[in-house]
Length: 265
Length: 265
Image 1 (tube, rainbow over the protein chains, first blue to last red):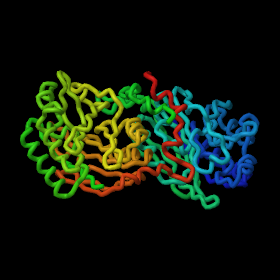
Image 2: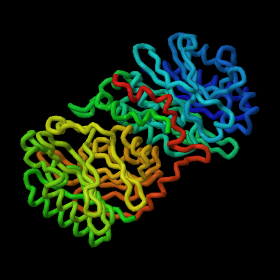
Image 3: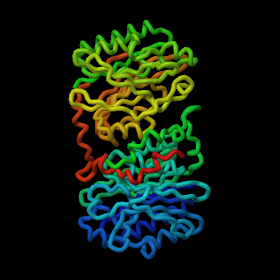
Image 4: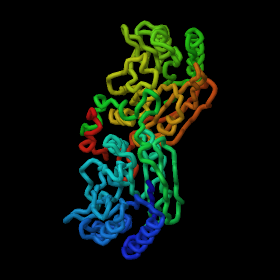
């Protein structure tokens, strides 16, 4: 299975240019026979909003937005795409990830753990992160800062995810090492697609990354430039959950001991 | 607060020699004004048992064992010690960590997540990992392979632990990087005390490690030799849980979304 990370550089307030750049990376991905493509968080809108109204202006509904239509269109002919999207639903906006496959909308995940000023404009998602089946593989979706909560990758693993698709806009340095541990502790692949560039003093770090079920870095992109990274993986490599003959990273869990994790404090 | 890691090299079947070596590291720690000392998992017995009866032979009760008595004695005059212990309770044995302070037994934690052949001799613990207060600081305890379950460090953080004391006998290479992430995701200190040496083809990796609430390695010991590592820390540095002005690593959790984590599958 051929997975691509479309590391791009959107800019606030330049929606037309952003869509042109996305079109270009979509074309590259198609030419490279990418079957599954991950784009960054808020891929078409840019990230560093100054106000809720500015964020609202760049938002679209999944069912009639221009960007969503572009993604849906690309997903025809056996392809699948997940991208961050500034999503509008009536008067609320969400920092969402949308999945399209075979020309259809598969699901929308609204980011649960909002980062810093995102809390000023976005409503948080209120459901656990989703998984879906595609070409006999099981994928999970989470967005950027969800990495900081081990609960999220764990939930995806418990739901059967073999590969976590992870649109991101990273400004702190910690995520890449953390995703290696998320892979290892759940024995699954992760595909973190980050963005590059600077917006209003926020520097994004690039270095989009694939990790293996053993926590190895399989591919790490450059820091500063838009770039397409492509990797062939076998998602079923994530099915073996044993780290020793007697240790299974999921079956060895003791949920009866973890009740504190679901208590509201 | 001055914390020490007593990285030693016990040997199966040489209990007297093991106790002499422990006595020596206890003396060193006292001479170095260590207030809190961590020893490895199964510090007096060695690790690589061949049979349940061999493990049973090296086990002791906390209330009348020679090793426990030595630990209790060292803890007088304001000191605290946590050590791994092959613990006997009637016909069962446990891979335990015992804590003594001020000449008293504070608590015993029985390892919940047993590693590989440990499952053949030890009964697993059935309670969540414990915390305790000492000199205005809050400590948590877990043992070795518990590191692979992010649930454990998270539970300790939710119970208020500022420092995780972590007796270990490590043979796989992953724990040190994982503990950096356990520190970061919970904003607390970790003190992993590993052992060195080889037993029956098992090579232990040394490199006992302190990490900071920011996930930095504060101290890493050598790989091959017994050694005392000492560090001064301020446990209250772990009280600030904010990674950004609007993000608190614990308060931002969404327990209402995590219910899958406590379901038996």
